[in-house]
Image (tube, rainbow, N blue to C red):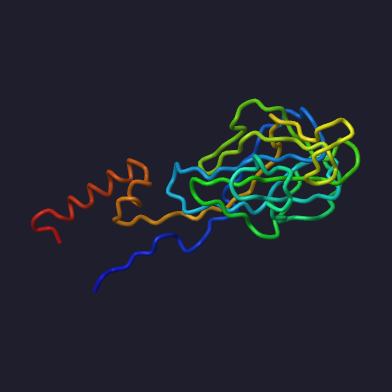
Amino acid sequence: MELTLPQSANYTAHESYSIDTTNHMDHTFCGIMFDIRAKTTLPVEYVEIYAVWVRGNLGPLTVWYTEGSYREKYDNKKEWNQVFEDTMAPTNQFTQLHLQKPVRIKSGESIGLYVHSKAPGDGAIVYDNERDRISHEDLFISLESGCAHISNEPFQNQHIWGWAWRPRREFVGRISQGVKYMLWRPVKEVHQKFPRSFREAVKTLLLVHNRNGST
């Protein structure tokens, strides 16, 4: 009888992983929009973002995501999906925004993420100046620099000071994520996704198994 192996783990590992950005306290305003990419360093089926943490005066907050990059559609609300809405109290500590539905990013793919406040004034959400194209990364995801938003209306292009977006800005906060690992199978495209040390160990085990007289 042919043995059928599962292709991925039957669970998602939550709460074990979070990514904290640097916090230079460069700026505050109404929103920040940036891309998150799921890395291919490890054999992962997908990453799920289930919470975003921010700080500032906060107020009426929403969180949105779009498939692919935010670029070229930062002002097109129809391309975005809302996954959080609530009013939060001002705080100097990172506050968790638990998403209504986890946002799944397949290995090697990206999403755009947008955190926005309708609070009046310019102190709602803390963010930083860009210091590198990749603002932060861990084994599973990388955060790219993005755009700050100075309008308290989501996706609005114009502000009393002109264009409402400020490029070369970085998200300040924390991303909480779960990971679903890929399971090894004797298939070339799967085998190659695993680290070299693991592949060498598999080769050794197969050689031992195939030796004459092995049982």
